[in-house]
Image (tube, rainbow over all chains, first blue to last red; front, side, top):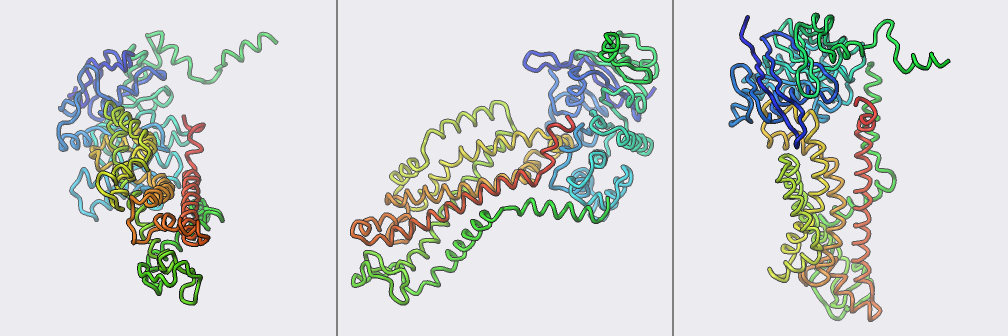
Length: 267
Length: 296
């Protein structure tokens, strides 16, 4: 058992009296993939935002790569170091990129921030990252408005990886894409993990997606964790009634929406 | 995606951006001509704008003096052309100062949010209650009349209008994922604002600057008309409208009419162009139309 690369202990967050996250603890091992699942409003995105530092926890502790990050960074150096530890890819591919910046420029800007590479070195690294996420040279040099949602999300992944993070948080990163593109991006993510050894924290409501990418799973409801365990075990043998409910809400063969079923009876 | 469709998409984007319409193009032309005349006009005029010759007072147009003379026998064309320079440079400074200060205040408030944002908003509310022209006159009365004090006072008076508008756009931009991704990367707030947030507000800023240029022109003309802006004998359209008043009563309205006409023409042109620019802003970011129903 290797030491955890991300450790979350007793995390709490209240927004003006409303409890969003209550006593959430979990840990992530290097190179592992942990999924946090739950319905909208279950607090999973708030957890992600607290981990990257976009929200401040009301209580609790977050440790990543051996450094505490429960408080805002005190120096420019610490801020940059945190950037090199954890990165995030957001849900909406359409607003995740600066509309005035080509993907190549966007990635280059991050390389300037985190590395000491010269212009030629950065160009090489941009090409490497483009290759890693499956974007060609033309796509890297047009404005985001000329790219599709799936392509933009690949750019967002490449930009996040430019910081060479140990942990990548994917906050519903494939939820806005249609199914075939979703599969492509998931393949990209699987390939990236194989080649770089980055650990994934996967925030999702989509159990089919989670089954594909995650080794372990944490189920959240109303701000707290209700169940946790290896993915296959939790999804195939859910113990908590809420997990069972989530499980049965997924459309599959033989699935019949309740409303349609009642209509049939009245006929 | 083929090469042709890319080319077509680019051409479409360009058409959307350049789509000022015939009225907008006319307005832009009027402004361009005025700017060129203001730049080279004083050299074009054959006569000295401040040389008076009472023998020609209210004199009709003569060869070499196509617009005739004012009450003191000064060449009207020469005064109109020299006046163009002050009448355009004054609003330019008002807009430049007001936009810079207003945008800076708005972006800081939008970025920090919280108590700073609410404090800035309350201060702006108080500033709204001072009419710009009145403030300009007060400042001129205290610090002495002149273009400089009028320009500063008007710039300050415009700050709340500019800041309120920019703030709401900046707040929306600040919470977009691309800005937050840069924050997570560890880029400093100042760099993010300078390199990403403000450049993305530029279409809005350009449109608003154009509109405010028109307002500033009228306001400065008013201040000059009351004798607290540009000081005679320097030529300025606002001053000329004022000094032509006595001529109007005596049946020689040329000076007031010509200067007033120039003001009206340019203000209308700036307003039309400003409106067209802010319309164009909506067109050249078409993905905004899709977002509401699309991916939420």
